[in-house]
Length: 102
Image (tube, rainbow, N blue to C red):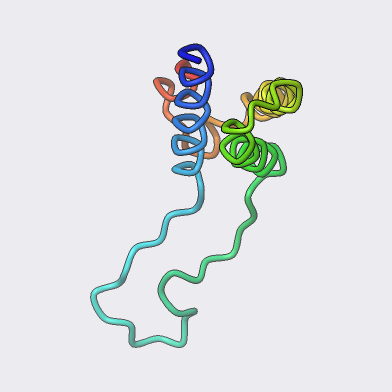
């Protein structure tokens, strides 16, 4: 049980850290132009991060039931998705500390 909690905490930390890599918006002092409203910035979340987020949510939902085969499959999906995304993470704003932790 202690091991599974460690895995869940690690996955949650990863999801939170990676979600910080998304586009950032700042509010202008005064919005007097015809620009898009504050907070509406185009961009997409990379598929690998969507996979990580979805698998982490899945783990949170199924962990209490103890379906360890599904949890292991989700962990494998997370590891594979991170491997695919890792080279792009720095370009998207992830710090080296965050990448090392993951």
